[in-house]
Amino acid sequence: QVQLVESGGGLVQPGGSLRLSCVASGSIFSIKTMAWYRQTPGKQRELVAVITHGGSTNYADSVKGRFTISRDNGKNMVYLQMNSLKPEDTAVYYCHADLYLSDTYLEHEYWGQGTQLTVSS
Image: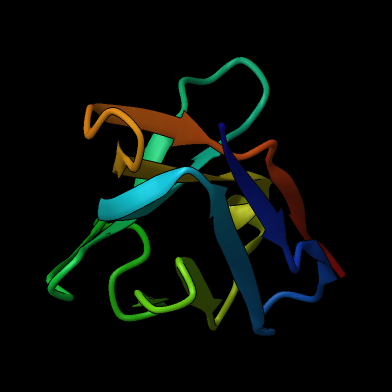
């Protein structure tokens, strides 16, 4: 019914920048919040940044001042601009959406398949 597809991951040198994108498609009435999580092997998935429909944001302490989350409600897209990247930012990044379906108006959560970011020289 609903798909989230991330793009933009890759290999970047420390200190570099990269932007992740995620588009939600399918039977969507409205998206409440969109977020980026990340996960490394052997660790729990952690919240990186979240943005509400109205544009309020919240960030993990480890990325404050370096990452910026934004969204385009008309296109059902969310972005994560990542600057001053560090090796410890290396992870699989997942897009998450908390939304209402257009056929049932029920609230559901969805995840993307993940995109790999590697920060290394």
